[in-house]
Image 1: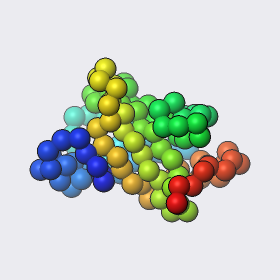
Image 2: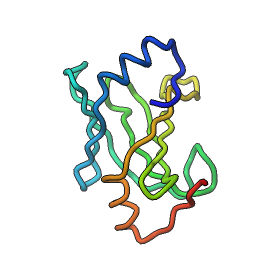
Image 3: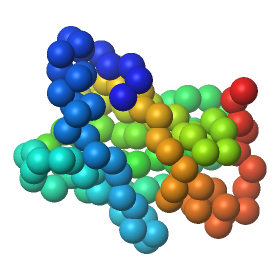
Image 4: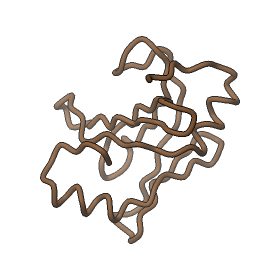
Length: 122
């Protein structure tokens, strides 16, 4: 997490416990943690053009609204090896809880398989 809408000690704890996200290639993504926290956290991946919350360019949207912490991840490629993910809360406040930097991996495969060019912010 690079930015967090909360107190610094809580950001540190979440960063320590959060291991990452594994996407299975069929549209399902699962949050992984160092310790089990509150049950499974599974989301559904979709390609959105335009991105509903960021701007008029495409993005990947990961819908975690069925879990214990409802939210959307709006994810955009920003360089060859990095993706930026804005986490939009689903509590009615229309706000963001955090911003994450994700390393190259599954998201690169998705963008490649779609044969599209995503705007890279430099």
